Amino acid sequence: MIRVWNVNRLVEELRADSVQERDKLHYVIASAILHFLVGPASLLSSPSWDTLEWNSVAMAIGLLGITSVFSANQGESGHSFIERYTCLSFPIIVRLYLVGYAVYYGANIAVFALWPAYQTQVYTQQLVSIIYGVFLVVGYFVWLRKVIKRVAAPVPS
Image (cartoon, rainbow, N blue to C red; front, side, top):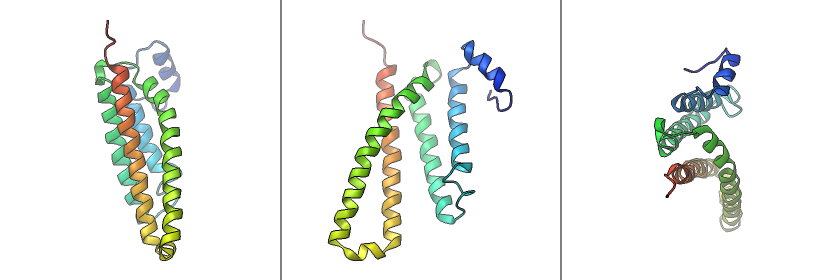
């Protein structure tokens, strides 16, 4: 059960290691949904149809990705989901975004040089940015699922 108001009780449950893996998954999903609904890139901060479309796609990918990563960690029978998710996310995000931004901006510079009219085609730029964003988010969850599956695998004797 997710505790929204009684943080002290949740603290005690975490200290006693009595929060189930499935409940930890629910906290991650609830946090992701809340972030997409009221976070800095939400409709509340920039109300537009484009934002709604992008947030809907990002939320769907995020929910599928988190659920997929949870399954790769052996679902409810697995353990240390949050620890693995958190610890492995950081280096994956750093590497993915460093390479991703280099490719994205390198490609944009090349396209600007080869196709000057691209600078005036806002719709094309937005479409490329959305495709790039989807690629990064999907890439993140595919990579995270792969490494968590390796961590969750039984250790050979």
